[in-house]
Length: 110
Image 1 (cartoon, rainbow, N blue to C red):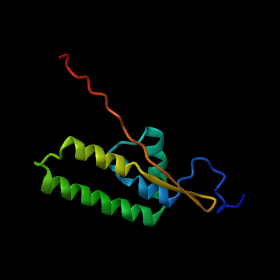
Image 2 (tube, rainbow, N blue to C red):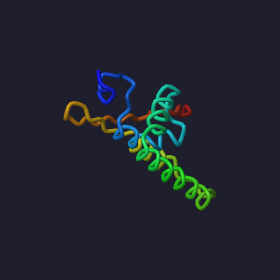
Image 3 (cartoon, helix red, strand yellow):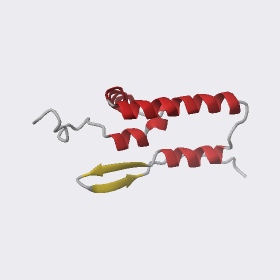
Image 4 (cartoon, rainbow, N blue to C red):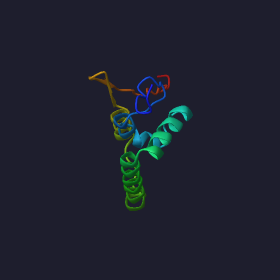
């Protein structure tokens, strides 16, 4: 296997994946293993590192300017579902995956 042929490495993160999951990384919503994989890719990939830096600054700016306002829970849920949608390209095919957190709410007895 040549130095550039890393498609056989199971932990290899591609730019499309890293860019799709930047906000999950910034919000600390990745598993520790995925966090390490994404950070390794970003450290080694200048274009992804640049995008990460831009998104990190944007998040900090929004927190400063909009820090007092709280988004409704429904909006947060929709945004999380949207952010979790990732695109993976393997073998010329595109796969879309959406992960949604489901929270069970117990209603009081009537």
